[in-house]
Image 1: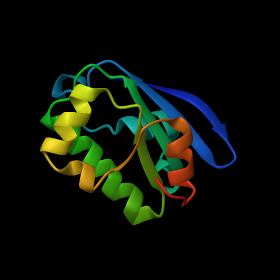
Image 2: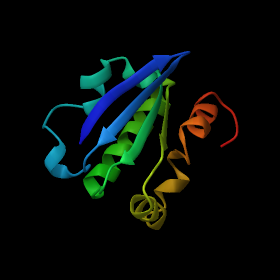
Image 3: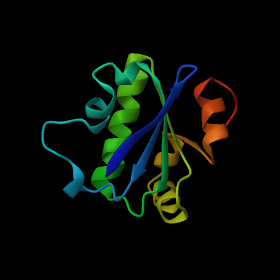
Amino acid sequence: MHLTLVSEDQGIVRIRNEGPITIAEFQPGTEPLEVLLGPDCFIRKVLLDLGETPIIDTSGVSWLLNCHNRFMARGGVLVLHSIPPLINNMLRLLSVDQVLRIADDDATARALALGGPA
């Protein structure tokens, strides 16, 4: 997992992931979003582009769910978008697509983050 800050504008933070999101990618005691954006990251509106994510394992799915819950608890928003078909199928199989905010592309993700329809 390699998270990159793409842009910050009009209250929206865009992040891109490149590489797998697996247990091997996590450093004990660190939260990747906090490392990238700082401790107040969960109060923000964040769009996470997964277009360059080839694989995600159950620890990665767990991380996404945990992040979603932290955003919800602190008043922020996390929207995933541009999800490759294999990962999208996995999220649907696990029914986490019913919990996470997911959009087809950046424009739809932005609208969803701002409170519009998905």
